[in-house]
Amino acid sequence: MSPRREAVPFAFVAENDDFRSNVTPPPRERPTASQLVGRTLLGLTLVAGLVGALVFGMPSLQSGDASGGRQQSEASDGR
Image (cartoon, rainbow, N blue to C red; front, side):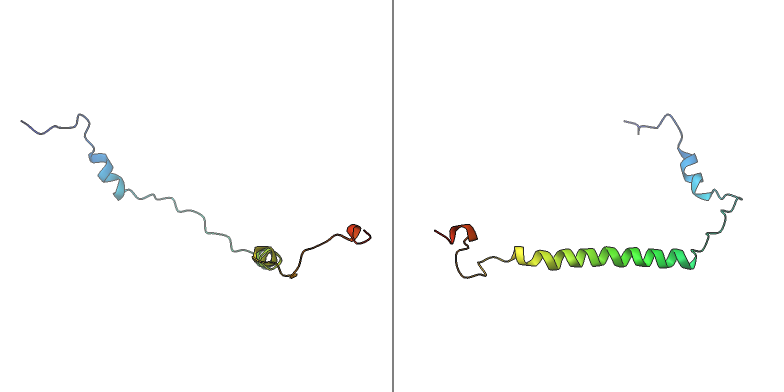
């Protein structure tokens, strides 16, 4: 049995790696000082929000009763 041959030659796929464009992209613009400060403040705000959510959420993640007894409402004190 003869090996199966493809109907379409795929030699052009190998040649694609050798292609180089003669058009160079424009240089990247450097961010200004205000853009750097803005990005830094945004990052710090996001990190502070995550840390604050973790700090305020820790008491609800603890198992067990911290008060040591059963909680009662003030409305039931007069009975």
